[in-house]
Length: 166
Image 1 (cartoon, rainbow, N blue to C red):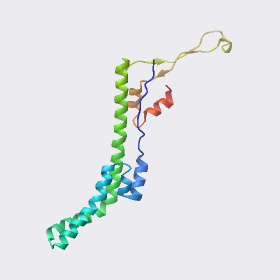
Image 2 (image 1 turned 90 degrees about the vertical axis):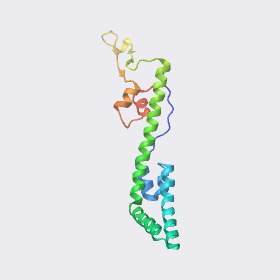
Image 3 (image 1 turned 45 degrees about the vertical axis):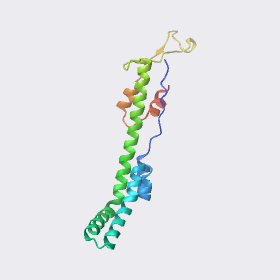
Image 4 (image 1 turned 60 degrees about the horizontal axis):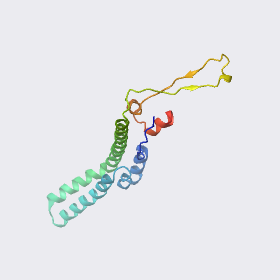
């Protein structure tokens, strides 16, 4: 039986996302989420621009709201960036895992394999190594990839193939 060949992208690290966002703020957020990076980079600029326009036109409502939002935003800015980075990396990694599961299900469908199938690796040792001259059969079960991924959250397809081979 052929082993499935599943193409996946590499996952992103939550630790690296937190470190980059902590050190570089919204610029570090680009590692986890490009959209989040743009939003968190330009939101303070727009709020500052609105505060300046409100002040220049002596519009107290516009100035008050934009300055108030800018003040609250400034106090929580780094924390919002870090939370957004963690959520972005988790979401990205989940999309990769879902795509790998979809590819594996498609492979199973194409090759019409039974998801409850057990694979036996049978090896016979040479008789000169066996003193009793009896045949020795070693059985090992290799779980289905999809079942293994479900029972090992946080693990990837690469971990499966490292552990069980192809």
